[in-house]
Image (cartoon, rainbow, N blue to C red; front, side, top):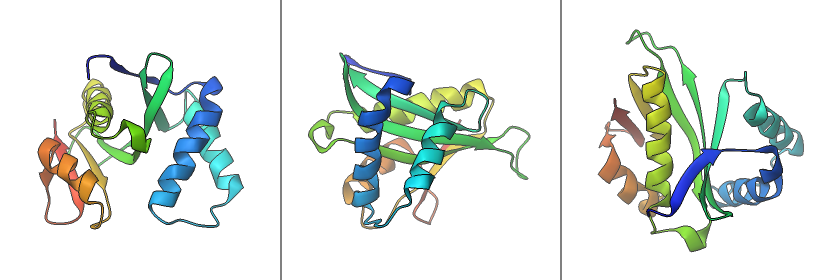
Length: 149
């Protein structure tokens, strides 16, 4: 895991990001996803002043996975919450700690923003993802994960 690092998504990552993005959509059996939404998502991720943030896990020059996240106010805390919206790795990169590294990178970004927590959702059938999430966060009684910061 020590050779895996996380960096912000860059404009020249478009092709590999799309490959991961489409893999993510396929994993959740999303078909007929609008190319316009994909384009808008990409543009939002690249906007340094926008609310949507993207990171990639890399080993050397190879991109292994992605994560998207955003901050929003909460009526329960002074600081914002951080919603980890999308997390996906290439199948060949799984079980190597890539997902955990990406989650921790989001947690670091959330701490820097004085966020109260990072949370995310997953489908109940996502057993591999849930086994990771159960290790790094607490289950809130829903298929909804919270990492208190």
